[in-house]
Length: 166
Image 1 (cartoon, rainbow, N blue to C red):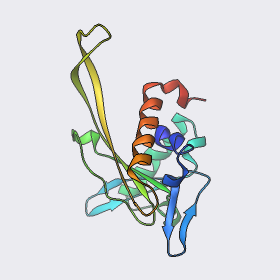
Image 2 (cartoon, rainbow, N blue to C red; image 1 turned 180 degrees about the horizontal axis):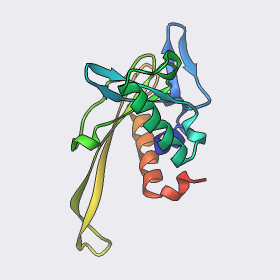
Image 3 (cartoon, rainbow, N blue to C red; image 1 turned 120 degrees about the horizontal axis):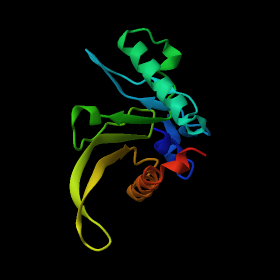
Image 4 (cartoon, rainbow, N blue to C red; image 1 turned 90 degrees about the vertical axis):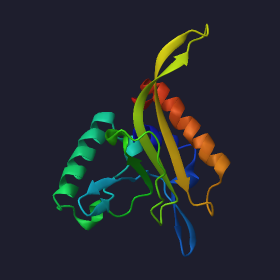
């Protein structure tokens, strides 16, 4: 979530809403996170994620998910998200496509971490952890190239986690 939010600083179109009056820009990332319920899905919102610490995001996510499953969220806690992350990694899902939740213009799907063979600098086979991220977006606002560049930035941040602590 932190990597997705920080990467949005370079790609503000992805952190916007499509309204009847056009694009609504947002300076802060109010990140909606998909939470599965017995009878559906709800997306509680963590406000200003890019400026929270990793531990702050973790605490907020656990609290909101728990309250969502108990049916105790207030409307302001699941409305107003500017970007969404959906994670099915805990179910062992290797890849999936998440559907954009209007009026948001983008959603990232996070799959499970899988250990696969890879190659080091000398072409030796070595074990590597891989994770697939996919993005869905409203093409009235953002195009495929911007999506690809955004995911490349998320990847860069995830591969250098110290960048997420500053």
